[in-house]
Image 1: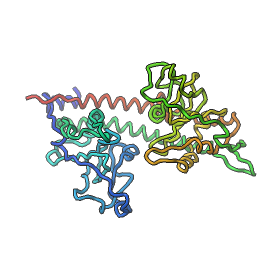
Image 2 (image 1 turned 180 degrees about the vertical axis):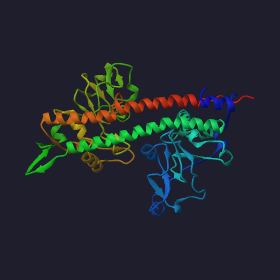
Image 3 (image 1 turned 30 degrees about the horizontal axis):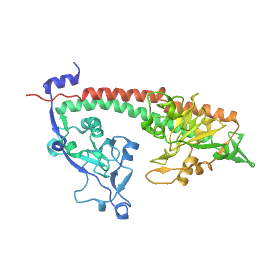
Length: 417
């Protein structure tokens, strides 16, 4: 019998109490101070959290990317340190534990522990339990109007309150998994930085005595329109997917599923529909033309499969006679990021149109040199992005292990008397 089993046997052999969220927490919504009032934002010192903070810095946060001033705070004051924020509208079911006094935007609902539960609920334990609450949120959405969690049901959602010693032991066990994952993520980030350094060095072209050189090899600057042809994808919808048939790539999958290159598709369409859709062949780049952020827009996937595949709207197929991976690596450089910033349209949905992409200039070395550079960069890219090998594979394994044990450790039976 391990320590946790001993604690459960000692303190709660017959199950644990379950309480409604509204019994345990003060539940309030965040808000956004007026952007038009500079007094609310300039030289702000109060952390103000958005979804970007969770995406950038994880699920236990002590500071935010943006800050607000005391003048912007409404009468109810700040949310207390050691509160949970959970997204209950827009992007549903993301959460973080905040360890400082703070505010958050209106997409978040804040759960602040009531005084009666200060000594009865360990917030690190509950931060882990919140993953189960996240799933509940995703499955309990009001669709009418703007999608949001059914808040009356949310407030009545029951959560387990095991004895504090049991909570602390569970938090300790699960923290050991997350700590190891954090260490692996830090090492992975160092590898990403290394990849970016070598990519920028190897793809840097400089002018020497009237000639442009890349790694000592002469290059010629050309626009993408001179190098190849942009073909816009056709109206493929997600509801067109079939279990098998002709492979296809939907633009949304470029952000969520595909990495740098692919030789198999996640989805398929019927042969009949495929005859009506535009297709990419081996060596083409499939480029997403819309995104919610400037970093992801124009993300490119190199198609390496032998068969032709169908492409959805909101994408371009880039057909060319160069080394496809060389071009794709170059589309990750700071020069291309700056180009996207200068040529974007839209705010909530960001686009870069094909007539703009055609004008982006890229240094073109001989094919052999393109292959040499690509061979070096591919090794770095595999180390940081290939889920089947190296650090990404180990992180994925640890994450699955954490999810497994979290499910086991947080599965409590209701106390019976």
